Image 1 (cartoon, rainbow, N blue to C red):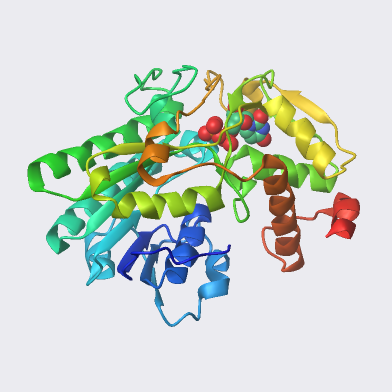
Image 2 (cartoon, helix red, strand yellow; image 1 turned 90 degrees about the horizontal axis):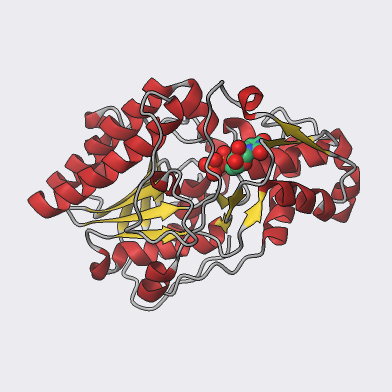
Length: 351
Ligand code: UDP
């Protein structure tokens, strides 16, 4: 990722929980580029040390291997940090559906540990939340104050939205009652290099299938839509929002500009990578557990973040598909992710 030091950025000492994850590792690189000292706290459950390979020896980075579920670990990692980017979470619909208890514990207890430690140390916090909090609200453009429309709490699919909603409520309550300097961002289907399809995320999953020449598994009728946002657009906006005093106690959407159905996404991936794969529609009951409910549509209104920090999603989906494919191929070369991409020769040749 290219980084730039923007005017007025005083170097800080930042803790990034979940810093070895997909978004976290891009954020760590960005903060180092801004001159920050960065402490990474990660239990490497879904993140990977490989994501930080490029900065592992950086003199201003410190890695702490541990869980946000341990308050002592959180307190130690936060020592002398003046701000916290809280990204550590159990993420991915597939993982949440399969392990709801783990997701609830990490996303609720872990987050409260981070928030209380930040109060003790008088550190500011950027809480990274998700568009999942809006649930099944299919409004044309979801504003931050839109209603939440969630399904039965006994369906594990909704526990992620429930837990993240509680996290936001905790953050706001600590802000109002105990003076925590916290702001919130809600990410909408952020995509880019280093994201893995292992936990169900659609874009790296379909790109991997296209590279292998396998059928692209599109769930349901494929007409559900999303607005994918590129990690390199989202990360700088996160930092700008964190440092803006007007953001205190507020939530901001950070999403993509282009609404696309998953079926069209699959075809765009096949075209972009010149793949011989076909699209296969998989009923939801087979893809997930029986009774699974999907979001039919999820479209952000990015006006609030645009007005505050000039956020604008600029990166095209085509270029993200190319970069995700190149990243998956380089991982294969390095022998990780156990991903034999035998059908990728035509794309490989173009790299
Ligand atoms: N999806 C799909 N094929 C896959 C993985 C996901 O069709 O291999 C669908 C999924 O059902 C959903 C959309 O793609 O409708 C986005 O899924 P993802 O898990 O990436 O994000 P989220 O559901 O949180 O928007």
